[in-house]
Length: 198
Image (tube, rainbow, N blue to C red; front, side):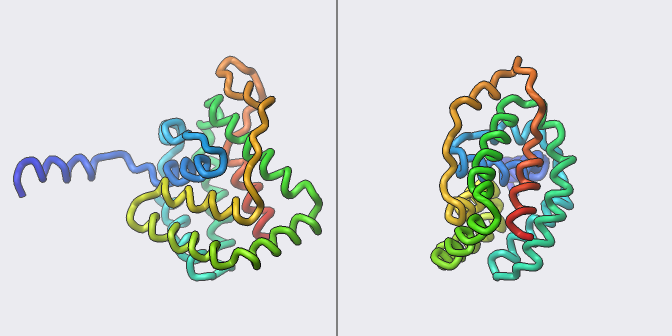
């Protein structure tokens, strides 16, 4: 290899790994049309075990292995709580958490029977689209396009429960001087997947 190629190899190997931060950023971009990648990469702890858990979960989703998908999500969310803890200091990410929580509560707040009926009906009606999204998500993940994989996960949930509707009065959560109660992004992910995969 020439000097230029060797230098590029070194830079790639020494670059910080932010797989899950990029993955979550893609999810947020799809769900809220908001770019939070820089903030997530800055505050989220890099956790190799978490990467492996997501890897297995995404593979399971793409093959229709529901039990492994549920199990790996549960494990991933437990690890994400600690890995995202420092992100609670970001006003932007707190706002993201509130907006995502509103999206979630709007759907599941209809009551278990109605929510699950809509969820299951959408899953049946859109099974082909959901399958394609799962396969593309796995492809994106395996080639290292983690943000794109996260966007597919966001698309997957929008297909199941509908688009998020932005809540303007929560925009003050973005103010860095706002002394609101911290809302770690991990809390949203935990509630989101725990409820949906019971």
